[in-house]
Amino acid sequence: MTVWDDLQGQSAVVAQLRQAALGDGLSHAWLFTGPPGSGRSNAAKAFAAALNCDQDDVSLRGCGECHACRTILGETHADVAFVRTEKVTITIEEARELVSTAGNRPSSGRWRIIVVEDADRMAERTTNVLLKAIEEPTPRTIWMLCAPSPADVLVTIRSRCRAVALRLPPAADVAALLVKRDGVDPAVADRAARAAQSHVGIARRLARDVEARQRRLETVRFPLGLRGITAAVMMADKLVKIATEEANSSNEERDAAEKAALLATLGAPETGTLPPAMRSQVKQLEDDQKRRAKRSVTDSLDRTLTDLLSFYRDVLIIQMGNSVELVNVELRSELEEFAGRSSAEVTLARMDAINKARKRITTTNVAPLLTIEAMAAGLI
Image 1 (cartoon, helix red, strand yellow):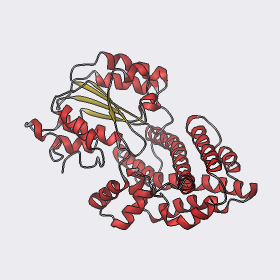
Image 2 (cartoon, helix red, strand yellow):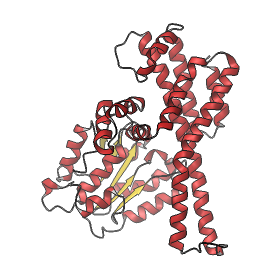
Image 3 (tube, helix red, strand yellow):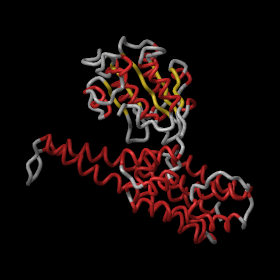
Image 4 (spheres, rainbow, N blue to C red):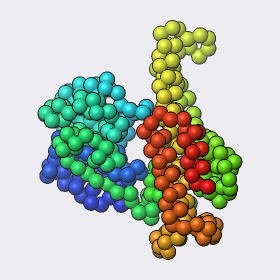
């Protein structure tokens, strides 16, 4: 097993990063781009592990077995910082902390590495805080920024980074990964990989969670019963509920574990009232969890709309007579009947309505239910 094993369908990227880890083309700043689910943050993590691997033989670095590889993959290595936000944006204060961290020499590894997984979630003035640190890097420091596309990062930043472009892996490769790494039944893995449209994280969740698969199928089938404005309003309400349930199912267990861990660290009494100093720290954690929950619902709703979009994508493929494999192949007969009741132009207009709703939800502070209701009315 090596650090590269999870990068399914990314042979060109693996070759590029392996070569750089050997010292050929190594840059102080990297920009990993690719659509959600392509594995850009996993690629950055694997690269960080290869750079700080304990193996003396450079050809063996990225072994996946040494202490450095295991701690970096587990995100506990002292010299590798992973930055992701559970909020809407990375704040300017957080960016300043990164710059301060980047100025420290590595304590045990070859490199001090900063992996920013949500580089697209920084406002311009926040990104400018990083600019000087990336322009004039501290010796032995490497920056790794991750974003959906180069356009999501300021040109002044991306012009100073070496680009690594990932693509969505084929569904067959994702299914093979689920079988090999997670022990998923091959038939379930294949369905999950197709339904997730090759998004590895979503595919794993669908493969493991029967209820998640059921919620997705319910979402995809909504257009089949869409008749009139009343049905549209009911669909919108249900879509928001599905997204909220999906987000809550992911957050509740993690929130409880985080609170239990904090109380244990603080040495909190098992019963009775917490001391004031402890209460303030617990309150801070709960506030952070609430902000994370809000973003989780937004992200879940965006994913729910992506699932809904897959229905119309399949309809369009049928209408155009294309031989591309359907995402929702189990609904083929219903999709064919639905496709026969409209034209490709109508389907494209409906897909545009969904994409506009996705953009509003993820980039503006709108009321989700009102946005989804407006979208649903455009699907009638």
